[in-house]
Length: 412
Image (tube, rainbow, N blue to C red):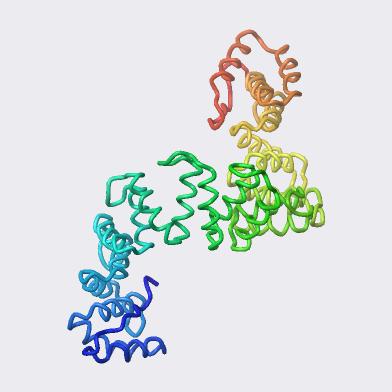
């Protein structure tokens, strides 16, 4: 729905407007149309606007965005701010007309200058994103602030975010907190999440896990997956709330079912360990798999372990190597070590001491103490050329790059 019926009392000489309004409120849009259309054709701005709403939403008439656009324009040209806003929305979305950000910005500007908070906010977005106007963060902030001062929750959130991040404005956590609070109290879910993060990390406020949990809870109840994950984490670890694995499972599951990778991974951990749910390796593997497919490296490593050991999935060394490689390429130390073992032993990959040495080196560099000893052991089996190649590969590789699948000198 683009807008609502405009509650404007027409001049006494325009009989029929109030009758149409009463009919529309009663749900009798056919009679409202009968009363308003002649008035709209005679130039009554309120009737033009309401006719546009009816065509836009298919109330009393077949939905027709072109007719809606025409009547919004007529009312907008007479200075009806709500019509100017809705006309801008239609140009921005390409409804009933080819998309035209410049015309959208022009009409947002007209409505914003009349003090319409939503138009001020949307004009701020257009300056922020450079849509229809040259990108200008300073102008965006001016319009965000105007909307925020009229209690526009999304504008208050963006203003808070701007202060928190220092985007286009000096960083100021106290100002960020103040604007987030205003937005959060109106139910703005992103502000509730960010407030929770500020309290959890002690950023701009004293660290307060109870406040963090409370704000995460408000956002979680609105279905926000990051808040659900964070609330699950707080229940799992007893931060700001009593420790409760069953509550942790509940909130992780809600986030996981929305595709939150870390929640999927943590839910897998709880199933693997039988915390808050009966121990179930198949469920653990299933949730690890969902997180692993989204690129969560520890889930990829754990899934590799489950394939290697046949826990929750059929034993499959090839699958284990596949998932170890995916995690290793993201810099996961233990996955790098296990993949190195596969190359050292020729397990589902060609035996290759150069790649084994490289992977043990990367693993050791990432903090796996046991990898250093394995590197020393494999080095004793290598020629000087192999050691040189491995050291070059190690120094040139960066996390996020594909790992080589074979070396020039290390095949055995």
